[in-house]
Length: 286
Image (cartoon, rainbow, N blue to C red; front, side, top):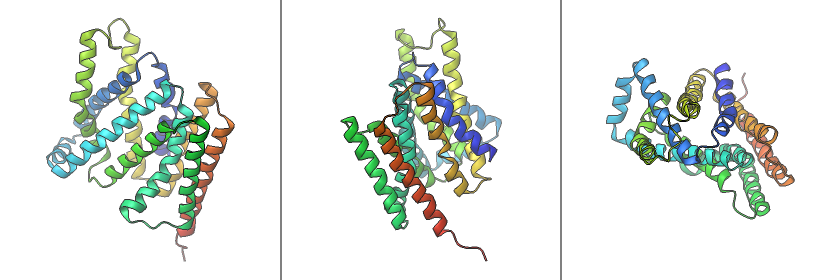
């Protein structure tokens, strides 16, 4: 339980950390996050003696193709999330992570042949109403919320079907991105336009620490997943967007409008329906 709470709690408060780096352009900040995450992944792999497992995964064509695809989706997700924080759209980003479990339900039905009960159908319908209402009140489609929800749901779907441990997969994904991300950062540094310079050592340290702060919640989550039931993990996952929503409104001063209240209300009711459906389906012990 402590591993799970620490994992989701860290994911919830990390927006404050990225907000401290608001002077760094979102794309550059995201690339630094990927580069230093790769460094952390490699160090952890060496310290834990998992070179053989990582090498076996790399040599498996099916696994490496899947991780290449998942790396694209997680990179998109990280970049869009940091962009949302930079543009003061953390409330919408939080909405995306509330919608994410409902999209996972839809993916399970469409791609994994899972059965769709009446309660889950109603929940997906309510999520659709929330997105539509948000689009009408914004005057444009809530691309940040849907982009975050879809990219993380697809990432989770790919990783679910890929037989590789969490840390090993994380290391391989970030290393697959490394030639591109490190190359771009090196080019910006050579041009003198990058944020990573000797003139700003404080910023440099914060950028480097973004790597372990990205890896740590994932490692804690992997530890929790081996010890805590999936139903409990499913309940605790709402801790992260809840913390982010509170931070967005009370720490970063983002507005929470009546339209937001309606959209979030629809999603919260939908999540209650999914939770109730899980209890209805649970077999009674005799």
